Image (cartoon, rainbow, N blue to C red; front, side):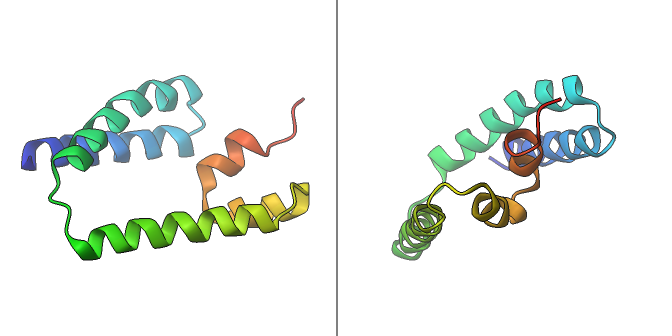
Length: 95
């Protein structure tokens, strides 16, 4: 699993670099190996009680925050401000 974690980290770094350089095709292509590597890690990582608690808590907080936004664009922009990739891909005005 250390090899998968390293490959996932290197792909994520390359995807971040491509995204920052505004190379959309490269960033999009690198998303697949990143997702695959991290899904494998997620699948084979031991599930402890603390990990399950953190996962449920984080998911519940995100759902609560999104539900409180009432689908207003300014509230969604504030909610997604911490997720730079989502802000660029989802909330950028279309030309």
